[in-house]
Length: 65
Image (cartoon, rainbow, N blue to C red; front, top):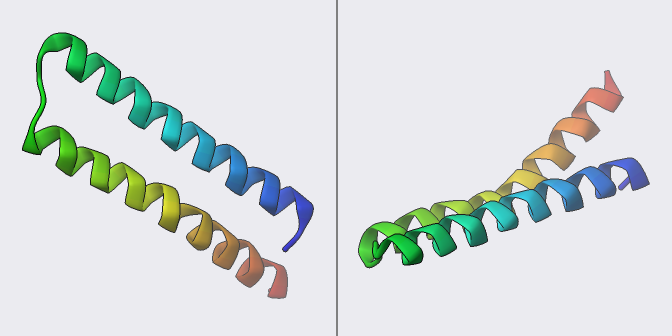
């Protein structure tokens, strides 16, 4: 993978993780918790895992054109 793509993937993953931590912190401070927060956390974690893969595939396919 190109260094630029790796950097973009790392930055997008870090941003998604920071958003998850912020959301969890705000929810806990507001006294909200339970299944709803866990479900959103799962979606964000899946995004952290899948978004970089999708970005890399997209970059690779656009370079071929």
